[in-house]
Image (cartoon, rainbow, N blue to C red; front, side, top):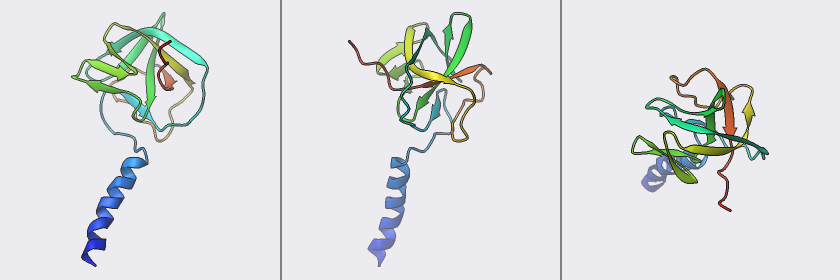
Length: 126
């Protein structure tokens, strides 16, 4: 009996980890993976701030919303998304503009109130 009871919490934690829970903090906006294939491409200059990651694309500003596990911040100043990017780098994000956030999305509270970009997986190097 004790073995079963001990395994239940471990199994519950493992299942939660596999289910793609959206984090509730950090500078990167995230959403569950949707499997949608967007053909659009956002090209701009990456901005990494302590409280938000965003992209300046010409006169427009976008907050990219990455799929869970699709991007991370290392060392507080490097975005890892296929390649490594720092503040001011040119970046290309496949995906599509989102009209409004999903109920299960995480958007950093200090991000600007601008357009959202549902970023897909990074482009493969050619």
